[in-house]
Length: 127
Picture 1 (cartoon, rainbow, N blue to C red):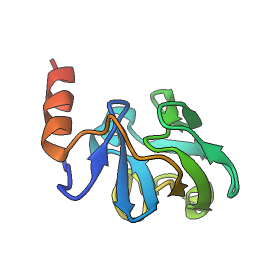
Picture 2 (tube, one colour):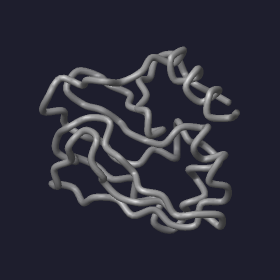
Picture 3 (cartoon, helix red, strand yellow):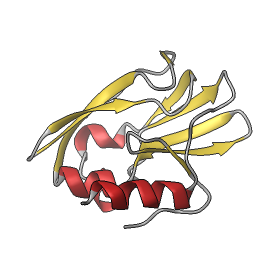
């Protein structure tokens, strides 16, 4: 399982790459492995507002459907439109090509985990 050190993680298995007041958001490598082959991703639209800890969309796989939760609050400024026709990019490249949305952050991010803390959380869920 990959957990890049430069990212922050939510307990609901999303990651945030924060640069100034912008965050790129996706799901973790651990989450995409649990889901299996991803077949559909529903995301908010550009201009929508997301709130940390609340539902921002959903993701479906051959195994299950799952809600997506925003790790930060703010306005959606970009959506990965490539996922509309190629949702499997999340499986192939969860941290690069499989990103979900970009958000202009409105509040200081809180309750996010470091890579080490997230790896410990994921390991504890495997048991």
